[in-house]
Amino acid sequence: MFPLPPEDRTLSPYTGWTRAHWEAVADGLLAAVEPYRSADGAVITLPGRESWSRCDGLEGYARTFLLAAFRVAGGGPEELLAPYARGLESGPGVWQPIEDRTQPMVEAASIALSLWLTRERLWDRLSPATRERVAVYLAGALRHEPVDNNWWLFPAMVGGFLSAVGLHAEEAGAAVERGLARIEPWYAGDGWYADGDNRSFDHYNGWAMHLYPALLAHLAGQGSPGPRLRRFLESYALTFDQDGRMLYQGRSLTYRFASATSLFAGALLEATPLSPGQTRRIASGVLRRFLDEGALSPEGLLTLGWHGPHEPSLQSYSGSASPYWASKAFLGLLLPAGHPVWTATEEPGPTGLAALPGPGLVVQHTGDVARLLNHGSQHHPGDPLYDRYAYSTRTAPTTGVPDNHFGVVGPDGTVAGRGTITPRGAGSAGDLAWAASAGAGVESLSVIRGAVEVRVHRVAPGSAVRQSGWALVASADPADQADQDDPAGGPGVRVRARDGDGLVSELVAVRGYSRAYVADAPEGSAFGAPAAVPVLEGVAADGWAVSTAVLDGDPAGTPSAAADDITLTVPSAAVTADEITLTWPDGTRHTFQVRTPDTAA
Image (cartoon, rainbow, N blue to C red; front, side):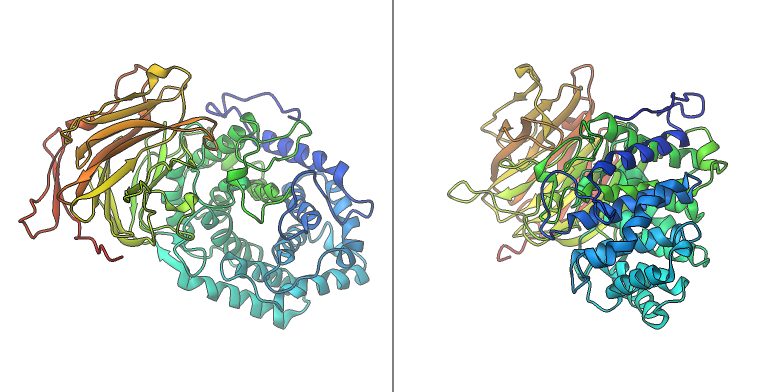
């Protein structure tokens, strides 16, 4: 870790961090990569695994160039640009060519954005011949086909820059229009975009789908791109907990604190529901959390993983320089030192509950934990980063024994996957929110109120079923894992796991389960190993499988939420109405429809 300024607990009572800390981290990250720069300055090849694209040196150049550009555009020393200017001289002849659906198209966007941000300090000082060579290279992004997802915004960003400098103007303008038009059908509502012609809702909303249109509008002097960014931040801000943890869900999680990018973008474009103190508190909390948890190698390089190296957090395209996508978070330095985001006293981030019918999600932040109930996001069936029924800031998916999963158990003991997720809606009523979906022969409903989540599933009557809960890094004390069998099934069958920090994961059977136990997941999760996964099993005689799940702090060692005090009334087999009524301890009642499942699915 590189040297940091003293904490300022007056201005920043929660994190102690100020703008000076962001500047110091940026400078430290840039200094750490310099030993790996080529003699001509055009590539930075970091130690570690090679990505499938095999253009990791270009990634190292482009992604750290973006960090340097944000730092200099925000008032940092211009000499940070010198090695990147040197790289531009030879880069077009060294970098891999931009072709259809190839990684150089992604990196071209970062180079173009960096040049746009620092135009007067760098681009305008290059020789005409160098400008021409760089422009010709970047223009390759305008003439080749991107992957049909957020990649459409990469040629759009290149086009925005080239339009601004008056080169390849016709092609450039067309690329901007084409990219913005292509993502429009993917807007699902509630501020959220799908990442392509699918239902992939994840962090790409913040660090791509909203970011690039926002920067195009800002740098072109067109003001705000519209109300969607503000709407997105209303719910997205709830996915960070009070200790600076971000939601572990979706792909490219090794980009880590890039998750803070859209928070700063909202402030930059005056399109945020957050106060300046909330914006800095969340963003600084995320950055500090990852650095405190070991995201850097001893050499000061960002590692491939989560807190530290973690292979399951990676994808085939992840290479040694991939984590430097996190440079986007330093967009906050475009806000001048006198901006309220940097001068206001830190305030706690928002807490609350939001149902999002468009993407089919529910997000909740209670303070200790932020979570997402998933009835609408899916990358491809079977991907644990998208298929789970719930995700949080304190837990991550496990392998072997899947967490937060429900499935029918086959004769051979195999638990069925979720299958293709079909959203059935989402909504709220007072302090309660719900979301529903259909999968492979299952109709599912999640209802959350406070710390208690009710998980309702309908399957073919007589099906053997299994429900798992939140996976925690296993406590060293065996007494922290408790289970109970009850051959009669019904209310009261419960299982509880506790981690070493006092966090409790509990499942309580309400209907259709007769056995409860803690399953071992030796490989653990991104938060550590081994992990403990609460599990319920049984036979859904009438087709209903109902349980309550709790993930909450429990320093006293007793359940923090009376999950087993919930009573439920479900229709008997003779009743045609597909309804379930929840009666809470305070007498509040809510009735929901849950369809008869299509068991042929």
